[in-house]
Length: 218
Image 1 (cartoon, rainbow, N blue to C red):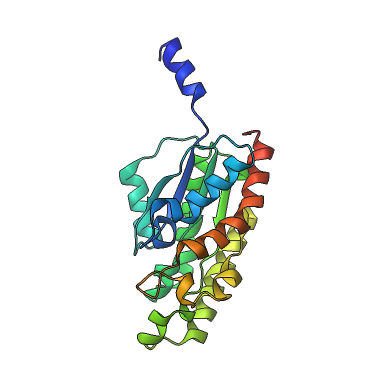
Image 2 (cartoon, rainbow, N blue to C red):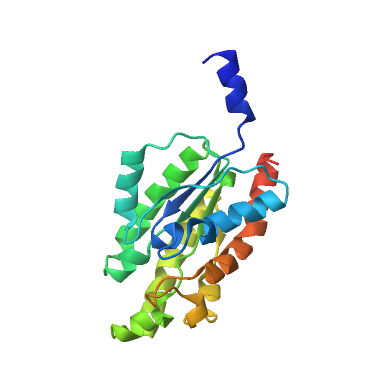
């Protein structure tokens, strides 16, 4: 790399990588309305010179499918911030909790590696509860069962984050607080609207800001 290239690279704002599924790509929502974009906007408003999110996420992905996509995309770290929100499709498809726990840990390890082996640069959001949505009702899904399974998956993810010293933001109660209202959903009656994503971003913002401040990326 030439001195000019090195200087240009050094002048670029710190990068943010968002890993996940439909909740991260924002099914039915413009990119600017998704929670990673709104989080990045909030961080910039607080003085963090953060680039727009790089996103590896697709509707329907399970943990193993996200892992395969990371393999195929081969993102190049280190990133100043890496977020991870994954698991709803494991629960939706009836995949085993033990499998999720193992594959989530592997994804968390990869997220840490992409963050320059610094767990303080990684942020995990809990799986929201889709069982309260009109889609769940229309498909005869038991909201109590969905809630129990989501809670079990989230408990496994939170425990894993604790083992690695990674910040865990529990947005599940927020998703349950009016998350089935029309204004909180897009037209499919399942996926969140930009308004709900704003609630998640607002909840994640102070945690992400603390991480970046600790890592010195202001």
